[in-house]
Every structure is written in structure tokens, then in C-alpha cells.
Length: 103
Image 1: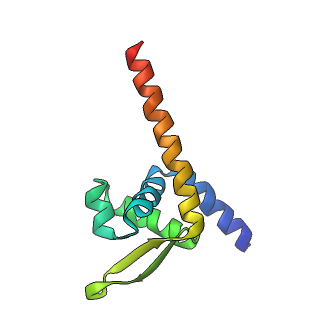
Image 2: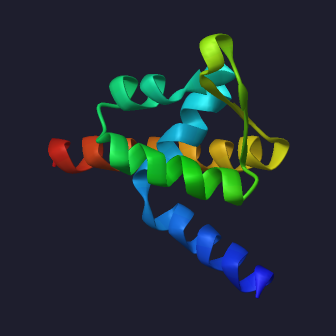
């Protein structure tokens, strides 16, 4: 059952753009708290909480306690590898959009 739960989570990662955005954010900033994601990405708090839950369960980010008992998140090695791919995908889409708009 555990493998199925992880597989579902991995599938959810690719479905939710917020998960990829969080991974990219953490790969660039090294750490973040929920408000960084909510305000920095201008996303609904419920969306961010769900994305963070998926990423923690999938072991792509780690949670610890920061200043003032805030939830502090860092990216794991596997999360970094996925963030590189997500960033590349994002760049390809942006490049494609430019090509389309020039046509």
C-alpha cells in the first residue's frame, strides 16, 4: 500500500503546478516558509498547503522548525534534481510561447 501512496503522490506532483513552483523556489532560495510560497507565488494558502504536504510526503522537501516556531522547508537532493527538470520545462514553454507570439 505504501508504494501505491507514494506513486499517487508522485502523480499529484506533476498535476499541480504549485509543487513544481515550490521546488524551483527552494532550489534557488535554499529554504522557505509557507508565507514565502503564498505571497511570493501569489497562490491560495490551501493550494500551497496541499502542495507542501505532497512534497513532504514524497520526500522532495524536508520540514523543520525555524524562528518563532515557523515551519521551515528545505529541498532534498532528489527534489533538486526534479527542480532542474521543472525549470528546464518552464524555460522550454516560455521559449515556445515567444516563438508562437512572433509568428
